[in-house]
Amino acid sequence: MKGHRTLKPTLQDSGTLQPLDEILARSVMQDLAREARAWRFEVAPNPCVGAAILAGHELVAKGFHEYYGGAHAELAAFANAARSPIPRSAWDTLLVTLEPCSSVGKTPPCTEFLLKSGIRRVVVGALDPDARHQGKGLRELQAAGIEVLLADDLAPLGEVAPHFLGWTSSERLRRPRPWTIAKWAQTRTGQLVPPMGVGGGRWISTPESLREVQVLRGRVDAIITGVGTVLADDPRFSVRPPGNPARPPWKIVFDSYLRTPPDAALFRPAGPGEGSGPVHILCLAGQDPVRERALREAGAQIHPLHVSSEHEFSLREAQEWMWSQGLRRVLLEAGPTLLSSYLAAELVDQLRIYTGSINGGQGPSMGESLSRLQLAERLDREWGSDAVLEAFLGSGG
Ligand SMILES: NC(=O)c1ccc[n+]([C@@H]2O[C@H](COP(=O)([O-])OP(=O)(O)OC[C@H]3O[C@@H](n4cnc5c(N)ncnc54)[C@H](OP(=O)(O)O)[C@@H]3O)[C@@H](O)[C@H]2O)c1
Image 1 (cartoon, rainbow, N blue to C red):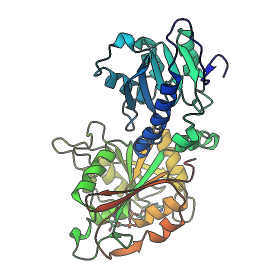
Image 2 (cartoon, rainbow, N blue to C red):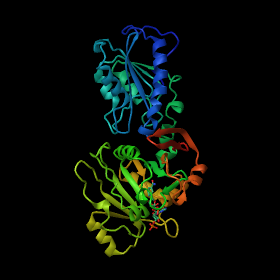
Image 3 (cartoon, rainbow, N blue to C red):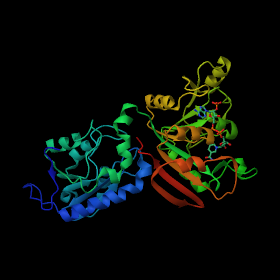
């Protein structure tokens, strides 16, 4: 990059600013890069990013991008710094692991915020990998007289947020499709349906896990399921607190022959404090017009898709249709049939699997599909009595 001073072991006083305390800057940047990764599964496909504000030789505050659609790290750092006893007039430097965004996404551009913030120096840990944006944010800051330094040995994106390299790869940009998170609950034997008479034939994970799923539902643009799940469980796929019901996700049903009952719970209006998104049914062309009308009257929007094999439409085409509808982050909450198809088609970017304490179960086990997958950045955690596995699949590209 032209025009950016690279962070070197000894830095010159810029003349207008106190010299940067490089030992502090390096150590804080390395901490930010490590700590930001704690939110990788919450923010993906966005990159996990950390930021900090320095006042001379003091660290004022840190901030992180903590969830998809939430405040970017730069804004979080300023919000946290506002609670510090160090006066704002002394804040001189912002450290950020990734070039500040200069385009409107889920939030306004961070460069716009920084230009108004009064900060006089910005140290960046990595450039935006997306060629359409790379360097743009830094040039905007420099043009406004902000000193910009690059320290790209301290927060390489390949280590901090490798999934974002996949998301911004040329292949992904050429044929865009939403970031797809597959979430399921399984018994100890990997089955998605509990044994007869257990958990009402449906429930495997604990209430704590179900609450966590509500939060996830509130942070996606759509929930995708198969008609098998609609017929077996009659789910509502609404968003309830602690999830954010303000912008409920679409409910997309893969239903080749329009078997979804028009009185399915999916169509019920949201209860008090809940959010319930619109129902979209993807089917094969040429279905029974009477059934189609009944579903439309129930509130569904019907989308016939082309056939890729004798009986199924192309999942990739379905994903591309979702992208064309503005859907960017979607949650697959389906039974083993649609889940296996998605995994086999390599259209899943991220996994969240809850393993409950139930033994045995009905139907196929996901164990074999899972053993064939290449899990990246895997995290195993406990949540109540459930074991939770989170991972990215492939390069996310
Ligand atoms: N534990 C969990 O997390 C969890 C989550 C959801 C469901 N479940 C359980 O799973 C069971 C239902 O399993 P399921 O496998 O029948 O449901 P599913 O995977 O949700 O739905 C399968 C149906 O989707 C349709 N479909 C359309 N296009 C498809 C494609 N390209 N690939 C695959 N399927 C496609 C097919 O029906 P058409 O050919 O008619 O279109 C297929 O039979 C229920 O007992 C439910 O309780 C468990």
